[in-house]
Length: 298
Image 1 (cartoon, rainbow, N blue to C red):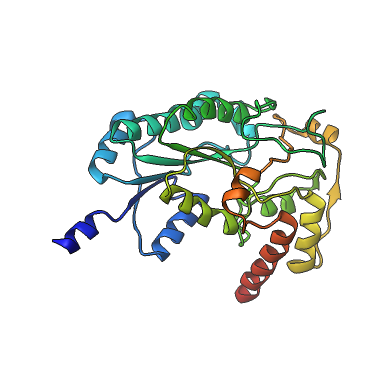
Image 2 (cartoon, helix red, strand yellow):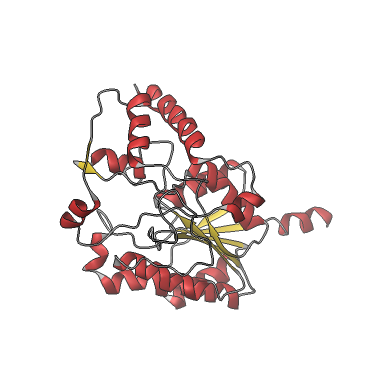
């Protein structure tokens, strides 16, 4: 009987967006721990299907890495607004609500920190944006959808919101920020908060296990520029790599939607996870891991 009790109390994880990039990495991490993991099949905007799936699987922890970012980039959201609303607002709020109504199941939502831009109070190199600061960036429909979703999700007592920014993985995944900027003809050069997934995804699982709720800025401490990242890419990955810069004004001429540039203050996260390294130190370690992965391929 004791064994049965222990077995039944082990966590059951359910991941939405499990076939995507970040969801796939979360699935790998959990399976490496030997955890019980299910990948959600219901569309988040289909409330009846979602409710049925959650009643059937009976998860104790839900991770939401689903959403609409647009292909090939967030410009897509400008001309597909209803789809963006369904994916980024209705779907994720449905999930939070269905989980709350099925016994306050904890939901960790991978959200976005692309809801701020540098301003007079938060200049480049100055103080970063805190979790409670009112979002001041509405230059893209994608960002506006994320702001609306966050304002609703924060009212649920069972929800943890993790604000990712420009995420980077150790491999050259096409979704990774570093892969994207190496493919552009020209790049801007602005310091930004960055989320290194190697460092942060294990922390997200720990936060879920501990039942943490509310909003967390979810990046490495500090800000790093496009040029600093590309110089490291050139040093560790491709010595032949060359790139050109252009201004934010010139960038705006070729994009349908604006792009957020900011530094988030992660003192709340760092106080709970002091091992989280500053982006400059962490980026060097990341490129060394990437180099090892690339060398194995060759």
